[in-house]
Length: 523
Image 1 (cartoon, rainbow, N blue to C red):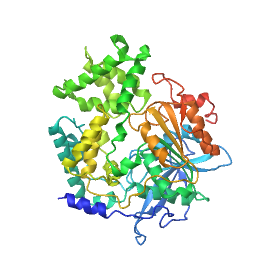
Image 2: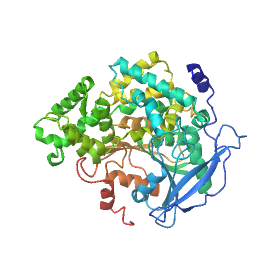
Image 3: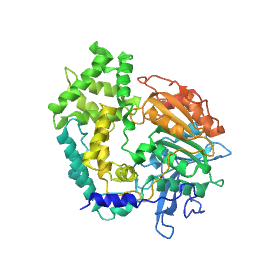
Image 4: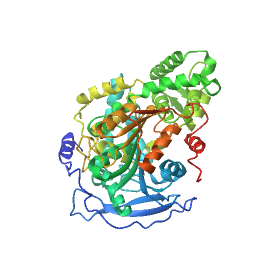
């Protein structure tokens, strides 16, 4: 059985490889591109062989990165832009294929767009601790995935025990320690530069990272600052906390975002389910919190569904990612307020993002990437109590989500073979563009400010809307800045604020904005 002392040894053995060198075992091979067999025949796929372990130059072990390319639509082609869409643990190829028109427009059409499924995701060095999804869910779902109530020590204790169950299951699963140690962010940063070496004659990186992709972007920019030509960090996760803490700042804007969701809802009566209550936004918000408090004592039951605070908070958490789900969120929450309509609630909830247990049924790659990178000092339950309190204080609505994530990482049994050990304070070859939304419940504007402060001459743009990343709430101002940055390298004035082009409850999207400003004329 895994013991804490083994985790300590794993932490001490983390590599301190040089941060400012070209990739170890860099390869000059070119990628052979062929049709992916998708509906869009111009989209191409290819593979690139890279070292499995960058800290061991004598090792012959390799992995194949699976890549997808959306070719440039205009000639002459400038270069390529690489993407990471977050997670950690999200595949990237199908996401790029689905967003290809939008991203071609925002990068100017003269770049090939390339994404690879990062190590630990999809079929690339997948980290798994169970033979089947059913075994995974039965082993630890109810112990570890329920959002811990910071005031319920018994529930927190049960979740802590569940995180240890997961750690033990993983550590004893065949092949787990090897794979889990190879999927850290530093290795993924080196993979990016391997791709650059294979496709770019000038050896320079152009990159757009979203969510966790901003941690990867900050890491690769810090490790290879002299090889950065263009880099956009959009919807920023604080890399300092990602590496050295328990992501407390991650929840900094969750409560403010929810407050303003209710305020904006009441401004549009024909799209807001709360509008028939003749109540103020403050009263409605208090009523919702009271419902959540009541569900702690006595959950509601409708058919086979238990409606408890975990279910409702999880629904709110994922619905706040995008204004496109704000109207159904208002319907679902309104149906819990007196007179309740649980049939309506259940129908809406089933259609909302994040409502399915399938989110838990893939693999342990997200934990391996997220937790394997951490070098946080607190590890025992007693030490973690201050972390739980800090998370609860950061957000009364969603801070308890962070408690579960923190417990996972405190007990995670394997560290990444290499961690970036620096301070994310460097001067890149070309200045970085950092974008953060005003109301982002998942990656707060504060994190974008903190990251921009570290990278010399970088420019922060505040996209004055809701959701997770600039794609969630369209702004002609923000989109012109991003396009100009990729096309000419120009940057706006420091601390630029961009109004969004529509309200959060309007039936519009980023694609509509791109059409209105003529960026999709090629489509």
